Figure 1 (cartoon, rainbow, N blue to C red):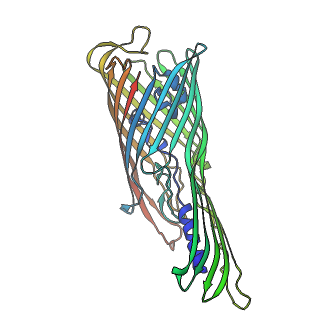
Figure 2: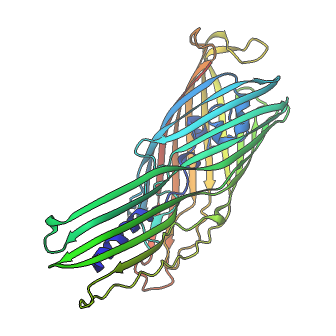
Length: 460
């Protein structure tokens, strides 16, 4: 019976110890334009990506827009020059923007999603004493969905907001019946598994103000989100050992936070005074100090009713895991993005939604983009028993695209094809333990992350 209880506890530990920091848009950018400009779009996103970067920008869309894209990130993070097991991440992104008017006031609705193509949710078992890249392990494995609305109540002011959804997991399993200890094939057991995907909602709010001919200023708030993981196990039945029947009940509950998205406040500016050139700067406050430990809280209970003449020593109920406080620190994250549009070729074409002057634009335009992000690690030195590994992150990105203005009569707007490439460098850090007898010991950690992708947008 001790084996039975230990096996059940191990199974629940495997199911409940995983963790992802957030979601793909927060880590790698959303859409190829955003990824190639370092995510500095709080004041300069008017396509589907505005549903993440700043929902107020949706009302700046020139017409109905449909977008779809794909991204693939290769995470080459190491411990002591060996692979750390952080998986490559990849999936589809897309969305739509529907602008219009309500009582003469410009209005827009936006919908955006990121869909990992290897599952909607992933769980991975790691003890708090085991070294792991806490902020990057499995973080692209979460479904992201956002729905927003935006209005322009004044010619210079845009306001937007909505709700974002993340996918969470909960489950329950039970085993009942009769187990024959000496003849397992004669056992009659029934099992039941119930697991489902639930959604967690958090708010998004944004404002965008036109600063005359200079460009725009944007402010964004993203709420905190926690994805709880709940798993319950129940084993009830009779164990038959050489004709001696022992009724048995074993219950185990596990509760943890499977993923955590800290609340954020973004202030951004987009300089657009020079035709064809945009220089964007964002600064994001990230509330890392609220980060919650991923260690599972478990409760186990074992009951057995052996015959009075059968001495049976039941194991003690396991002690709760002692969770060490994380003490992460809040951080300011600067982001810089630049875009310059080259007029490539073709005559002037009237493009829908491009202004009262007829919206004449060249048939083909080539946008070139670059970006940089510096993310200082919020994780304190891991000198004790925990091993939440992290390092400062420097991200450099490049991108290019092709804009085909009014390529068809059926497409009076434009067809835009964007590509991006992103390299993140995490300089090596050395972790030195205070206790020379620590079972993990000192170690080195560092690596790179490479993200490539493309997005296609049709504006009508």
